[in-house]
Length: 354
Image 1 (cartoon, rainbow, N blue to C red):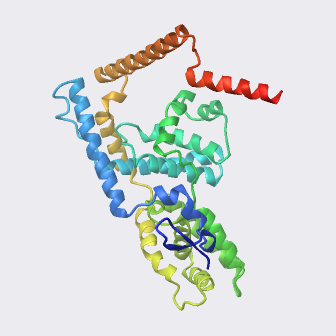
Image 2: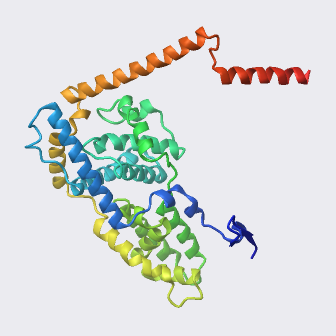
Image 3: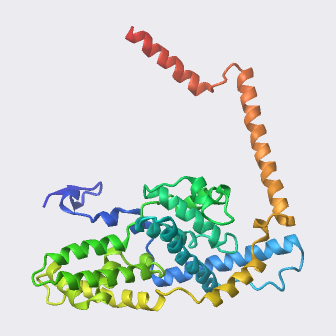
């Protein structure tokens, strides 16, 4: 093993001797992995901050109007998002999008609501934008007009208006690693093991794939790696085949350590991998109409005031730029001193070439 020295003269292993898994170099691994406690804290904090801001907006719109408003809890927000995660699957079936698009759109929607509240942005609208964005980032694009025309009461602007907000909320981290791809790899591996029935394996794969789809309704992807989720789903379908795969991967271990990780993942999928109760979500959605941020509702006093403020700032910015351009023109330096200097240098270089 070779070594190099840091500025503090400490020997460290060279990068060539350490093989970092590709997944660990991804933005998903670095920025979108949390513990269950961290997820609960993030959602709770986001909800508390949102309720406080929206209550202030209600008071600014009409003093005393927030006293009778029943704001959503973090759990109710999550329940509503979960419903629209399921609706992505329905839309993908309608458009016949491949699984890569569906899985990516689901991840985008779930990530968005780690940074935003449903009381600002309704999941129905964000879902449509997340799915359209996923078609582009997975290289399965569809014309915007065609996409919008197949969704009732949806115009192209309904989709595009939120696109930058969604992309920004994702941190522009568009690449997503999915368990269904890892499951495919496990399926290929198991085929090479001796004494395996292809018929039994195919049945196990289909069942495991169903569990992968159920896992999309859960927080599993924020807590565990795609390969861990895939193996847990395979174990739910066939514990025997999953153990055989693990023993083949860790031949020197009587009990492969990876098997110890599967219990909590399987528990999450079984507990949370079902669609929410429609009536419960309907009640949440009904209350959402009453506690939606008035700053996002056209026609309210605070909405009009906010629009006026944005227009005022935009006009001030335009005037500042126009004034700066006027001064530069009057001083005979419309491109700025640095650009003029660079242009002169380029001219000198051309003369040298001659």
